[in-house]
Length: 367
Image (cartoon, rainbow, N blue to C red):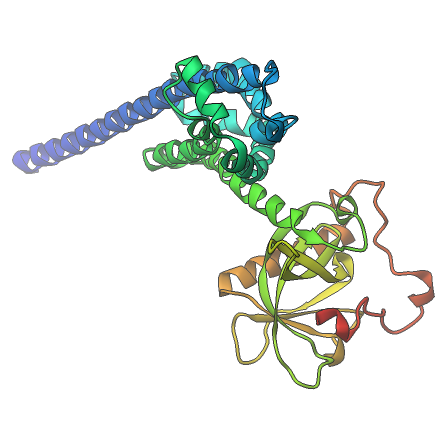
């Protein structure tokens, strides 16, 4: 054997090992740095929340000279900021500190407290109302409170901090993902999903708050799974012209609505029709356009009962089809999370012997 060749191979292996170890050290240092930033900014965030309450909410509650337009508006202006402050000060900061030396596991902290992050959904949904009140009636009252408290930032800058915090969590967890090994990715991804779900849920809640005239209560529809705008074709119309519809997929129903303006020029969604999720059939491909698909009720997809939908993108279409099929499957196999107090998803007995169920709509529902 050639001793010089063996030496070269050994030297090459040693170099590779050194490079791998150096890469691991760099990655570990990067994770420590990100974790230190997460903790440092969390402590600053808690102080900012306390300062917001002490500088603005507390004096407002105790004021005798409150302007008439601001009386009774504390809950609108501040939303559930006290709940958010309590959660971060008394629970989440302490929980995060447990992971100071284990940054690769910090995603578990977000997953463990995922349900608590729903407080942000309410806060974000309320935020536009808060802004409206502050713009219309906040000056000069809150500027005076700011001066009295010696606060560097105005109330608007303080009240946007919870929204910014969720975005900061997303950025830091994405940074952690970028320097983690395959084994470490799972929980960090799950933690990131918790933070990404907050703006999505808030957006869903905002759109749902605009739904008007639905013939059953929002509570009986189940949770919002998806909502988006589609072009819809009614098969009963002689002239096949699409109409734009805002659609909501709930656990129990697929709801169609039309965007209109009320007397004040404010947008809302006027309820048009609904289909029971358990009764829906899906035709995934409609000739001529990859973004089109069809939904129908009954046992067979008769052409007069098919409602053709066009999504904005193929990705949106596939997401909706996947979720609707999952809902149908959960219903049939008893995996649905719908509370027992809600109506059971059954075909009425009078229809059981017939060849198809009757669609819950008429062509004027689309007008």
